Amino acid sequence: MTKRYWFVILTYILVAQLAAIPIARFLLFSGLEEGPAAGLANIISFSLGLIIILFLLRPDMKNRHNTPGRSTRWQAVGWSLLGILMAYGGQILANIVEQMVLGIEPGSENTAEIIAMIESFPFMILIVSIIGPILEEIIFRMIIFGALYKRFNFPIAAVLSSIIFAAVHFDFSHLLIYTAMGFVFAYLYVKTKRILVPIIAHIAINTIAVILNLLLGDFINELLEQQESLNQAALFIGGLL
Image 1 (tube, rainbow, N blue to C red):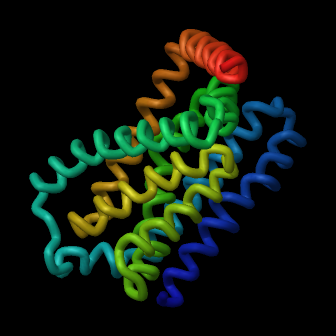
Image 2 (cartoon, rainbow, N blue to C red):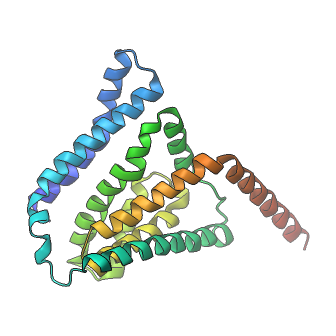
């Protein structure tokens, strides 16, 4: 991995992630309420981090057309659309395994916290739906997966980078779902040789999830409660048998 890529990773950690803490404190001291202060701080830190990272990646952007096997624009469009379906398919399969095999209850605390932040400060949707996916694909697919792929075969490199991607979300109960999505995004990157393809798929997945949770949040919660009741009933009947 080049020094430039290490600087990109450090920028992601120190600027996009950690810088939000002192910025939020400053905004709180300035009189903003906690919700808007946290939201605005995240937008500032993520936006600044993205600008710096794109500046550091200028050589990659200039040389991107020289990549062997790079897909055409129309192929990239097709794989982006297919990638959305693949990511959803991976989520569904992982969800089935989590519930039926591992006994993990549906619903994500991480998603609930994100939706709560968006409801408190609507502009947070810019991070969740656009800036966040761009940064994550650059870090976890282009750099981390790219470095691992030079040393290992695709399955190993994809799984290792996807586990790191999953762990960073701190939603360990649904580690399998994040890993499945990371695996799909890695495949899209290798298949097309364009980081923009997994970025588009990731943006679409996050945006759809946010819209569904904002518009149908109560209905989804009712379904989850019904699912939990059915699971408990099944366990009770299974115990009697």
